[in-house]
Image: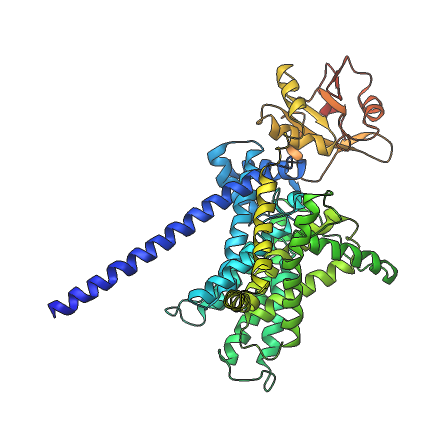
Length: 537
């Protein structure tokens, strides 16, 4: 017995050491990615969209958990990025750094989770190949896509909890009872739907649809890996999770934030050609292959190299749909259907107007990478090994693609950071002790956050009569209460497209002639000796 114990101990020692080394390497890689993506996030300045989310998180951090008096946009991010912002803000304080750090964390999680989901149950070199392929496809975001995937909350970040839900389905611990998996998936998807209804397209409807189809007798080919009742329970879990769509209305009824309805609707068929154009370019943009947006030279070369990843994702979707009834793997068809639904909805919608609207299909990024890695990782490994043995041209080609992705990441990190969007204005206002005022939306929350909260600038817009009125989009109604705030200045000009057109004449029409007018660095600041909020309606 003593001899057997010694053998086991001797065997366990190297095994534990190898496991520890793997954990160390993975942790180091995650830390490096976090730093690199933080650096990439700095390439785009934080706009008032992200700044408003920072201010909402600050309010929640100070006890206003339901965001009473707040108007949010058509997507609240209430159960996703806002809690993340709260934690970061508790450490770093109020400032644009909250957005950059959160963006780096979210994108790092996206890469890691896509790799884990791509790996699935595969072990050894096969599992590693799957994970590396998935991570590699989204390793280096295109510079023009920084503000879509590496800045303020967008739909790309919403795919983080969606990937977690698919991981629960795919790698449920054996110690769990089978019913617990659907219950956990229901909670994850339901909470995510509260924050972002796009999960209906990328997660909930695909899960329900695929599970219902698979549960039909005689549909699937080959033996089942899960009983029919389990797939039906997953479909039910998805359907229940969809009720999260109505949660913002319940929150508003309780006195919490009010959310604008999602602008939806199908575009006329004649506009679908335009939608197809922007959908095509949007997919290229997400996967770093949009040579239309790349600057001539090295950036075009990087975009061409990234076509390899975009093509793999496209092939993965097509193959998954063609073999829909052959897969014993539930995750593959769910990923493929989610991608197709998101792209089809965007292509035929009224929201596909330009490259920045690609944010509407941001969820395709993580799903596509996981799908491609899961389907082609082992094939890529086999091709590499075959090319290595035969000394064929394929191996140098694969090396060029790999170094192209790494080079694109290094090139992006080496670019100069963009200064905070309204930092000059914020600094000037602090210096002149102007602490409470009004401006157009793109100058308001951004200036407040750029000043670290030393200045509060609230958004206004023009009504039908040409007067300034509160702008009820990502704003707090309390900020316009004259008993709580004393606003005595209006910012009417500034760098385009940040300024509010017609703000000067609207300010004079609303408040009368200003006592003083300052011009600084392209901004115009009008000051009155009165609380302007008393005249603001």
